[in-house]
Length: 583
Image (tube, rainbow, N blue to C red; front, side, top):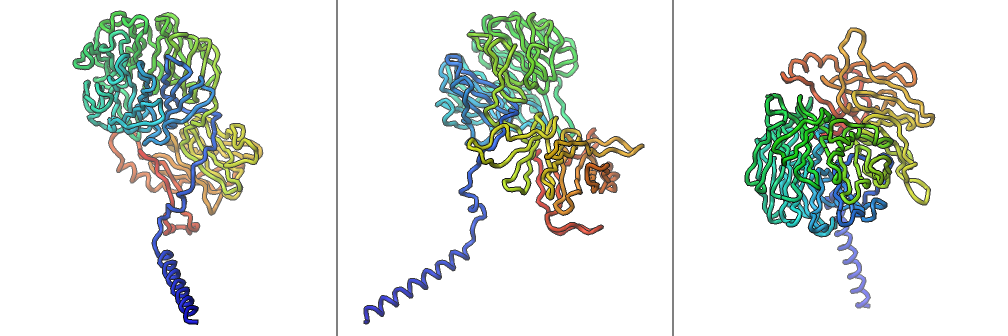
């Protein structure tokens, strides 16, 4: 009996102890993030429209191996000539890529420069340069974090430890970490071998394949602000070294700045592989265009004035087997058979334009790869016909939104690829495929605001405030862009003006543009739409306080309080969950 009593007391004591522990555990503070620790990201596409490509690197010993660097989707690799692709950079610190390079003497050594070099409103900055010793399986950051944007990497043809980097530096302000950097120990240490000033970086480098101590560097002075872009200055030029970067000289003879004080902008460079005496340059200048040198850059001849939108492109390629066949990348592809005297824009057709990258097989000039704002394209007949590789999801979304349906849908706007909507899941065996995504708007897609009550109604927006209302059931679409009244100044919109639908009054849509003017409509579409200014009183104050330089204030996000609808003349005390676009 005594033994039974002891057992009962032990059980009671344990129960009390467990109860106390449970209370303590319940009282212990928990990290809200713990609720999501078991969640994993699931790729839902789409791959149908591609995304901006910045560079290719191909193993010349095995052209089936290709690396592609994207503007915001990291690095991808194929080992079967583009049939399948694998993301190899997802675990690194950034996903914006400027350049990719393979060591000619050892294709397992791959370098990636982060931070895309194109001077867009949406250009993301990187955190330096990365190196892989196992073909992209693992990476190590090798420094140069403050360079932000790396335009080119070139590697010594026989010594993979010797690497040169074209560093553009900060896009939004001055900084000393720009110019040409060199390492001779595989990235353990770096030397800034060419420094112009804190405003001038280097956007391109070309190495003589026969004499790798001879290099050409394209210096580029640039600055972006919230209200505009200045792409040029007196310090942009071509520099040459013959001793591996120990000394440099500014090239002048025959170039636009020889007898001109006008500003020079972005410059693209390339060297003819079979005869490195021949060098080409694409130069932004009032007397610029396409230039050719036949004495390793000592003297130049202007071949023509072609130089499409330099700040966004400035990529020139010489066919490795024909020094007169020139490709200049732009919104269209410019093709020349006479060394740049004349160009044809009709050779490359039927694929998405805005080209930024090109690789031509030195063993077979018919085999080409090009990359544009619309993804990756393959050609086997020297650019006459192209195959679009819509097998990797690299769409560059600016904004996304969700509805409250089950399953919910995702809508969003993409850089230069319109706006799209797609499901979060499907009942088909293959899951979500390209065909499940629907294009709902053109141009550069930005905000896509979904009606909370009628989720088939989506308000989509492209650049300069072009807002449409679309009925997803019928495909009917009409413009609801705010327009100034007669006699008022023309409305000026931000590149991506925010759009929001009220969660309390679904017929109330708000948008915004410079001077912090916000407009709202309560008139349900498709009736005549009327926007009214809900902050006109701020105009004069904003005009008094704005800077003296040309431009305006910048509004990139608006939202309404998720609490209750505010009464006239009053505002909600609940803080709205707004998002801000990083500068």
